[in-house]
Image 1 (cartoon, one colour):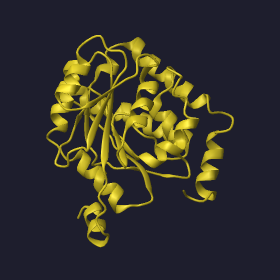
Image 2 (tube, helix red, strand yellow; image 1 turned 90 degrees about the vertical axis):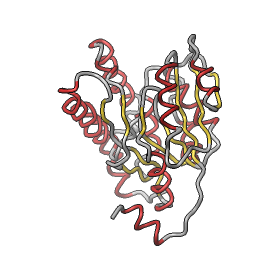
Image 3 (cartoon, helix red, strand yellow; image 1 turned 30 degrees about the horizontal axis):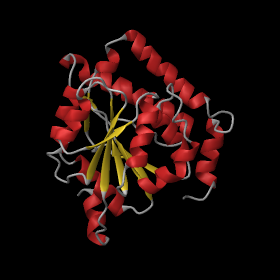
Length: 258
């Protein structure tokens, strides 16, 4: 039996509001498809916040057409856009995905059950599968891509890292962490930066059943793919020496949980 369902039987049901945050820049067609999928959720979001990061296409019009709230945050890249969306979110829980993502229909339902069942949970994240690109290599490529991410970044952080296209966190945790974030650094990976500041004494959980379809677009350009690695190293190194991995692992096992 699903552990969330077992826990839900034993605990009183606490209603949580959920905000979905999606940064977007010139991605109207993907956004339209993503919002259509969110409309099929078995647990609908309380609000959808679209952060327009300086689009010149009709991304904002698409968002408004689907009933989303649009926040303008031109410039600064994804870190600034994501932070603006989290600041604008009103829900108890903030769920995050990208415009080119397709969440499973029970995505928000699983997120709600995770936080309802565990009052000490700060954030939950999941994996993904490719929805485009050559079919014969999709499965192997996603294992290589996400496997290396979770193993290498998790080792540096001392805990499970958030995957930026598929995670949710309590809004209260964001409010505690936001002043220490590097949201004005366009080179930083916002999910890695957020993971750094939420852990290691808060609980972040990986749910293998939190399913998300993502685009293979990061692999279309070798230069772009290498730049993602550069951003990843940058996102870790800017926190050193205060956040050396062995110091984080030590705090994880010795400091009181928040």
